[in-house]
Image 1 (cartoon, rainbow, N blue to C red):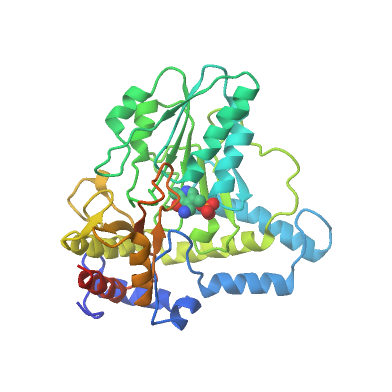
Image 2: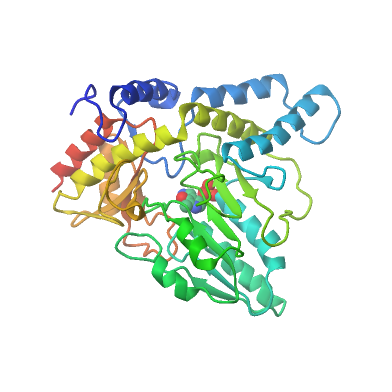
Length: 408
Ligand code: PMP
């Protein structure tokens, strides 16, 4: 297929043109046509609008926030405060008057903050929490640390593992019913798995735990990649934690959105110090950019590319795709429980993954090739992850497939 042919699962020529226009807005991508950046699950590239917003801020009103009464300081404070509201708006928060947004350096810091400042004071002796043991380490370590901090105070909390279905990489929603008990007080879950690329069907967790248990969602791989809509009743969660840098903003940016409806109000403790004003400015510009581009359309594009890659790769003998075996663009008749977002992780039968990563880079493909920070992963096993964003093209996928096919 060449570039002029529409990609199945998309809105044909319209989406091709739309994508081309968006891709042109990424200076680093445009400057390197010989390279293909396929590591957006690690961090996204940045559109010009975000770079410009940062430059404008630093050259017109850089000052500290919440301190000083002169115009630059006031403007900075206003930018920080209004970005909190912008995050709520981006997430289609139906009750912005009740929720709160706290800025962080990313998902890792965000989840740790929820664990230390909210979960620890909330739990009592004998309570149970359910956490993911095969997702990103950032979504396991903080909960284990919370248990340790509580144990030091004589409060015993049981940490149970969210059960998995090995074949699809989804949680095992049937087994989940058995893991939930009368003392289950909290669940930490992931929205989109950073290795398997699947939507983890959080609504089934809500069904299993009932209406009163708070759920904290690691949305590192969903915010910026697909619509994350809190006005959708199937996304009934209490915390949404994400990284700005995976969603077009600068590294070191991110946020915690807290609903403040179940359990105590989330009030991050202690003196907060100077916020990352530049990161917050970039986050605001990134959210504006993403809303204008359309998260549904972005998701449709990356899912269509992912389908193309997965559907061909699984017919190439030496490759094993991790997680579900189907690509599943929007409109697929296969069950929603298997829907794969813009991430495909695989291994070659004979070529170690780090070697495969080097080979792919020698052909201009930048992929991730290691244990992917997965909790419990065997460091030696490794795998290669291709993760996509809206700037990726059909030609990049086809070129990649040609190289992968030549390595059989
Ligand atoms: N959770 C998931 C699902 C992730 O994919 C990542 C980053 N790969 C993180 C958490 C950690 O994000 P950060 O490094 O931005 O803190």
